[in-house]
Length: 164
Ligand code: PNS
Image (cartoon, rainbow, N blue to C red):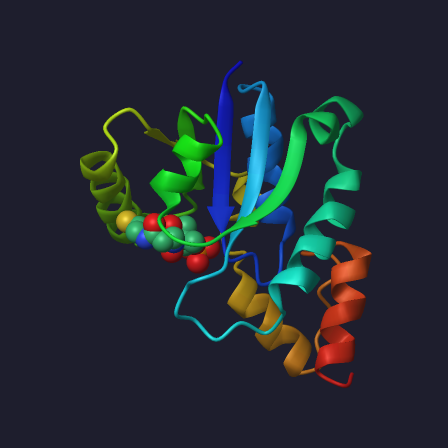
């Protein structure tokens, strides 16, 4: 069984992330969407809130892809978590050239740490190229509509966080 980890901060999960999960689920037998607990960023949502949002959002996927997808969180090194989960791959989405430098550095470092774990880059649909969790947060904060970018539950929780 080929298992892939799709790690991230998912603060919050967007339709761009869901697009990547769908593509990954069409290749691998099992996808573990894993929220990182130890990133230095100051997240808007708690890990528990994000896990719930992801679980609800993946219900919008095709049934066969939803069934292949598990949601989890992890602490510590991503490659160690991948080994514990018997995963052979790490999935990362690549939207634009601007993503490349950081992703390339991370992929090569992860390979140095654990040669056997392969990083696979997937490109979401072009309509999601500009989509980014931080931009979504900002749009809501400034009173904009994000219903085309995140699931209804996430949109509602964003509005509540920002008192909109
Ligand atoms: O969604 P993000 O914030 O771009 O995800 C970054 C993430 C969580 C994938 C990255 O920070 C990570 O892998 N963190 C776990 C700690 C780790 O393994 N760091 C070394 C990476 S080379």
